[in-house]
Length: 110
Image (tube, rainbow, N blue to C red):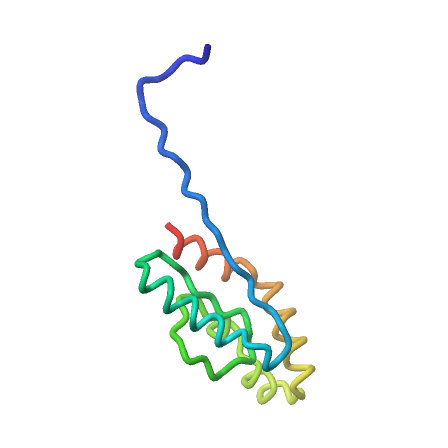
């Protein structure tokens, strides 16, 4: 039998998440707004993350917003790219700077 050090081990908290994806107009924003209202009403802890660097019209407050790292509108203006090029650049920028997102997720879930 394993020996006990006499200290109680703290149970690890299990985190759950939802990744909401779909084409424009599919209802992603409506769904996220509804989930935010539901979890707030139930007093459940939640962290709302916006991973869309092109969405500049969110009706809710995000706890973590990728647009703080890179914004497609800014990319298009500064680099002279169109919407598709701006989005590709933004996605590659997020990939290279993934530590930014990981650090914020860790801080938000402590």
